[in-house]
Image (cartoon, rainbow, N blue to C red; front, side, top):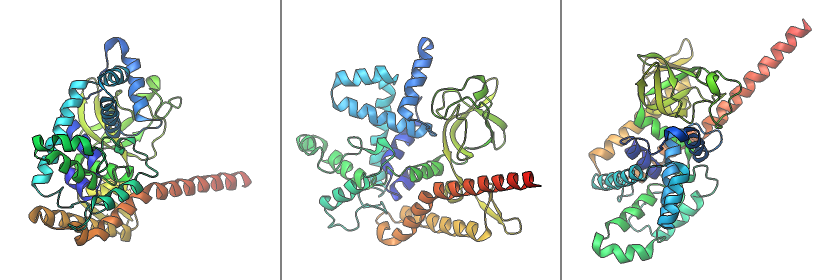
Length: 379
């Protein structure tokens, strides 16, 4: 997950997610304040949220901003949001370890990011900051904003004071992290990278109950528990009530990535993120194309309707991307921006257009249903 995050220049939120899965959830739910805690979590997630992982990213970003304002602001923020300071500190420490590891294996300071990373050694921080400012426009993912992804020079004074004690590493790491995070606000891209990290933990939405439940706005009562999903091997499962996806009355996409399954009276999936078919075709399991039926299969059980030439195109893109990653691992000094920038730009554009393509398909389906109803009435 982190390697692809660096390659696609959306590393910072991916670091938080990768660090977070190693610890218990920072969201605390006291027995006597469960409703308040759930409401606070959904408020952080935002209206219509469809990702627990991006909710974690937003929570971490909020904590960083509150902590920067002083201990009083930090305590107030943690109390209102029902977040664990200990878990957030653990996530912060793990993020730092990951940054150091990525730097050691050549995925940070050498300009790994194919979009927005350093192109040449003489690229200055001024040019990088200009690209960073341009990328801030139209963002949908709050957690990618400063101060948790600082601009070069934003903490110049603090870095200057501590440079001798830290050997300058932290300042250099922050600059490298910015270079590898200029696409941190590209939510479709971040979701696709999450897919690369969590696959094969995929669930397919089978049915959604509870017409009275509101997307992103609390749990829809007993009916909401009828949100059923299907996973490989275990068959039917259900969304865990602590998930922000739990209670949605409508799924815009039918695939869910999840961190783990737990079994009590039922099998539940926890920490879910909704995705479309494109991330699975690019970062999921082996893709098989059935030309006769115009469909593709991922991992032997997830099926998509797709024109054969489209499915073949995805397979070709994926083969090139896998080859590029292997080259970088084998040759850390490889300048990937020069090597295959066009390839990654093509993949990013594909992911960004998926929601538009899906919306057009739904409109076409609705139009066809309306036309069929009208024809039946005329008959």
